[in-house]
Image 1 (tube, rainbow over the protein chains, first blue to last red):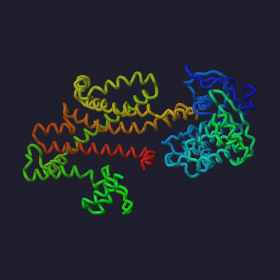
Image 2: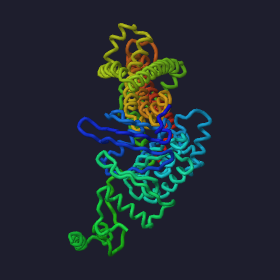
Image 3: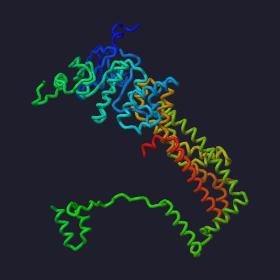
Image 4: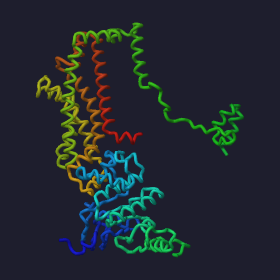
Length: 245
Length: 293
């Protein structure tokens, strides 16, 4: 049925090209993401990381391109904004498009998992930014995705909320084991969460780094600092007077 | 520097020290709170909205009592009240009211359905938009009153003409606002629906229509007002019943009191129906009210 590669991998991408007539955004990208693997994608703004995620999500209707792209049918996207329908209650947002009473139960369970039990009938704009993003996570989880695509999901949150969300996301991924592609510009976030970090630059991957640190990861760990300065260099950031440990 | 100098000058001109503390910005010496000139209109006056109309009525009562207003120009308030009682006694007011209200209601309902349907078709399909939007914009440019001669030729002077005029007037605001709301639904929600693999039916029922509801309700408020306006017009042309007919007849006999009774009823109808739509708005847009709070 499916080719051999996609039985082992949640994502199988070969020679993916995306762009507009005047500009190439993705220039022949290859990538495999294993089932249950957590991959973070770093890149400067304009490096094409969002384009890549949107290509995987099948949201790039107006972008021209070629290449092989195999993704699971059951994938789910978390956007930077929570993207909840303001005219639907929290539970209705979670179960959007799901059929019947099974959906209701699953939705309630997913909300409890993200710590929002009891807020089912609240309106989205009664929630804080962090809570809204947790509803968005529940909306993704309830569909039990084989692949979770997250486009800077914590970018709009304050630093403290973000730390809590990292812990929550780690916990949820450990339980549900989807393959994850997390697009972010936050190097620390990538190192704390991912099994593997990719750096995209001018439409190509210039780095593919395996993070083999035990979890939870201590930001004070010298290896954490080593990864960070290595990645920052790949991203073209040279910090003067700060040597890699 | 300048402020200190200003403060010194204010003091030297002999104003009280309290005043100077308000004028001099630093105010550190006295520790008095800094006071800014208020630019907004300030707190609401109790019963503020009622003051203007009450004043008008007062002028009317006073002018009539002192004989400053000729009753042939404007009947005294008590004469109007008497006329009101007389018209109800004779049953004329009720009969005409029922006739008018049913015309308005039928016209509004038909216009509502047609306007909404057209807006949804034009809002959700490009072909629909190509076919519908142009004619509606053209219709919008023609004053409804200008169509009446044609409508009389087509439908005669009976109920058909009257209801059609109201329908044609009501369609426009409903269509414009609903269509606009449909078209301005955030494309991010469309993207969301795609990633959630929603069906076309779910997409329309959960995303598109609820999202366009605020626009529809705004259109409804305009439509309700327009429906009364066009009712007045059609009832004063070739009618044999209805509030407008009652008013027109009163004009022939120079009964300003009856004219005023008719006008008061129109005012009440307009305000009550607008209030009803607003009530409906509050009911169905609960999610918005929480935002306003």
